[in-house]
Image 1 (cartoon, helix red, strand yellow):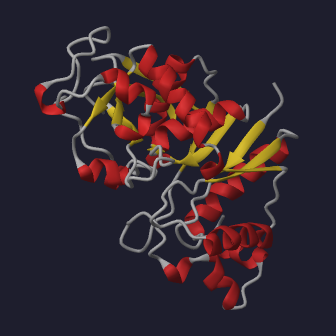
Image 2: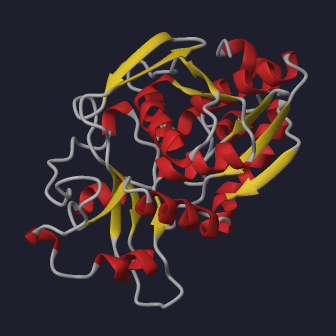
Length: 290
């Protein structure tokens, strides 16, 4: 298949040098392969996403010299995520869960190494993939009801216990993770937070990412090394949904003087700030060795 990559920023703040490095690598690899790029606006964090950040990220990427051929916005694609959820429920790969508000709040964001989803204790996990009686902790609601209306419940993906997920990363090399040890049953859907009948809830980062990469026929995913464990989770989703697994290239992370991964709180290293200081794109690329 022809090379297809993607840039996947979240409009929850201004892009910083860490984003610039990852996206510059993705852009360069697509150009070297004579391929195409998608810009995917990952705006599912409704509490933090802002239209002005969405506009700023496109402007800053163009200023740096990065271009793309196609665009999509995740908030426009809820029916596709809902269809994938229904498929996972029907095949026994997903189950309803009422646990951990903290996990649910983080589920729409990319889980970096320093804020990864905790290993799930299995409180709401059914006794087997073919037995859908809810535990006492989960209440007496009929599973059929929540299957028909996903907005009524949170959902987790049932990982195969002690199964090793192995893949070869094009930059980081061979990777192996053990389901149930390195990560547990992970959130794939957060229930509706309002009583609006049209609110069906939101997919997690993991589910939305797997669905969108498949829909746009991504052949290579370029992203930060802190998302290696997310790749193992997404490979399990891809298998359960019948998707092709793309190749992966996880970049090294840019860190500040204390060794902390760059985040959107590092305003001094935002591309917008460097632009306002009068630096040119070439100076940014050269000074920070991007």
